[in-house]
Image (cartoon, rainbow, N blue to C red; front, top):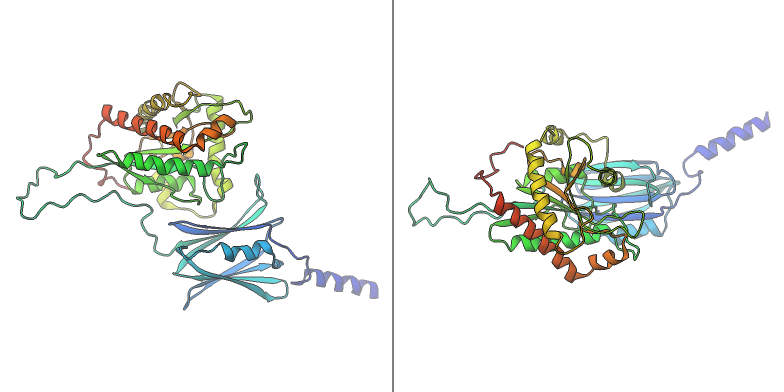
Length: 401
């Protein structure tokens, strides 16, 4: 009888909060962005949690069961900067035995999304806290406004006073939790694509009839489908996703351009690459329990033959121009089911600028001079496309979302 009581007492102690084994975080990361701020807590096993919000002042409280203080958790507060759009301060401490409390002092009311991610690639178990604005701001900057007509001049309603700028959406692949491919010397695809995207924006903006919008302008993760939504929100006339892929063999080299396919991939390599790029959401992390009806309406019609034909023309013009700067991995525009190219009404291409897994190409991709040559070629390809296929519609402003 005494033996049985001892067993019950031992079991009760083990199950009680604070009596289980302590868990230290392996890493903590903070990713601020214009659309949301993300906190990622990584551990060797899933972290049990509860959270709630408080007002006056605004706070998010997160209780982490069995987590004890450590370097990774303490580093979280050190990553916060005053520029973070949502978090003013981060506080932490033991709330009760076996319970670590994390308090986020907020600059504004937020809509939190908290979810777990299983181990994947270089990451262990991750607890993700996304903070969204209660009133979501515009997802990207709108094109520059037209110059107003001088009130002293007679009005000419039948004739527009300016030519509409062509809006080009530039998507730097990967970002934040998702580093993309890694080079032999440690280069990260997400860094190279962002550098190229920023330079390409400068080149596009320098054209008198064009304006570029960056889908991602910093080191943070944007879900693939949301990249499409952001491009449509700014009424983009075309969409380009910039990448620098890796292959299992280091000798693979050259640039490639891809468009969406309705009927399967044009090659096994294109199919493999599309599958790999579409897994970005798994690496970067999205809350699969969140359903977005706007996104469903946006992407519901994928019978987009005309858009794909325009994408192929755009891709051919860019591929031809890039061929003057780098060896082409494929001489034709390839097609596959890339999720990021599924805007139903925007010509969209994915550019693999080079293989970051090739030591020579990795070195060139990090060279500012070569980056300039590459984005010059892409911009020239875009200009060539519009020279041959000028916009006929006066504006996309009347398009239904």
